Image (cartoon, rainbow, N blue to C red; front, side, top):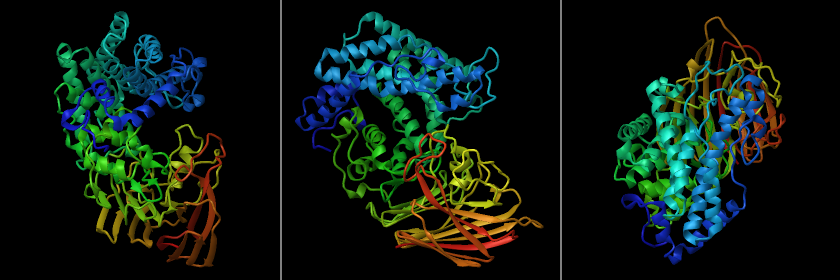
Length: 623
């Protein structure tokens, strides 16, 4: 993007080390090299990461305690905590070690080399990189006596940290004994991953589930380790790794859809790209030229919504600032695949390439024009989502609607959810996803309570109360197949229909129709209970504000107003309309307290009493 010759990208991939050598000679890249060095100077001042060996050590020496460990029995708490600390430690070093190595290559300053050596001396003892116990995340879980759960996420992150560092440090920088020890560690990782697939030890191998990130990260570790050690000397293991990687690439949607949502997609596709890039550097382009990687940037960029929001269905965290958070992956996509969409998004929506190795290389890519921008709207069958916006401006209007596919993973009870941003202001949102140990994760966030969907009955927590009794019979069930029928989707707006009937007990039908343009969204719901049954029918509308709203009306007609929008409600039966405060990890972010300090207003619309059927029209207009 700087008008200099392309470095380490597309068909001309070179190693990170060679890329750095070339970048040092480009005056236009000097400020970006300085930014990378500034980050490295911050990192070199930190103590090295040391492996936790007891539960008391987890959380010390820059390790991390997964909060889910606190709820586990003494028998498994330490095992789980150590396994998760391995992943966190290796994930940290996958970014930090190559950064420090790059700083040493660019400057030759001994402090950077000494820090790299000290960390590698510590890391050479981490065999295996991933200790067992990562499946013990819930009370009552146990590993069969004498058995383990196999290699996992730390495997891929840890091997990446070592492989990239060995690639970047100048030849002769490491003592032979250290290199030999690291190679021995990698030999052990190769043998362990191969044995996992042969014995079908991990759950994802037994169930043949290549979609999950848990399949991909050990696969990256296997491929990268074989390449460091010499693929010719590990032909069978290398081909196993490549085959696993290709299975994962084949498993996802042909249009770039990822069935675990954008949060897990960012993590998993990053792993895929590191493996594919390493293969391509050795002349094996089977992965890097795969159609999924070519199409994924378009699907990813279609998560960008106005108001600096990201489409955050699935376990995708907060929505605010998603474009900027996507910079590292967009940079890798631009460098590895040459994607015009990724390059356009970096330049026009994300704030430029990231301040890392991929970002440095991405800054040398040719500039693309606005023709590279993806369409403003799309319907994805495998992701089962329709997304739309009226412009790429941040103060524009955007809509997305969520269905459900049989292959969805890391999904919520959100089939039928409707999101609406009007003129740069969030109007209808979902609750979002905090960390998994958050006390309100199950009751208020991942459940139907956290989404703009139907509920039968009223016995659910409509207040921020971590101890609320969970009555699930009337909630939407998990894993519902809910196809979206697109009746119209164009620059002016759209109209879609969803069938979510299979998501509830005692329900004969719930059909939702959604129509929109730049000014308003209209939702029509038709609910019919099973013959002979009646119940209260309830809809929530999560608002992108924590301000109180004005509610007026009676009987079957109501109006809700606040500074950003008006909601008009009309039902076939008398309604009761109220407002509550619910936790927010979409516009804002929750804390680790039982009573989070970030909330938003939620409108609760119910039938005034039990009914057999309901037709409800909800029109939301931005002001």
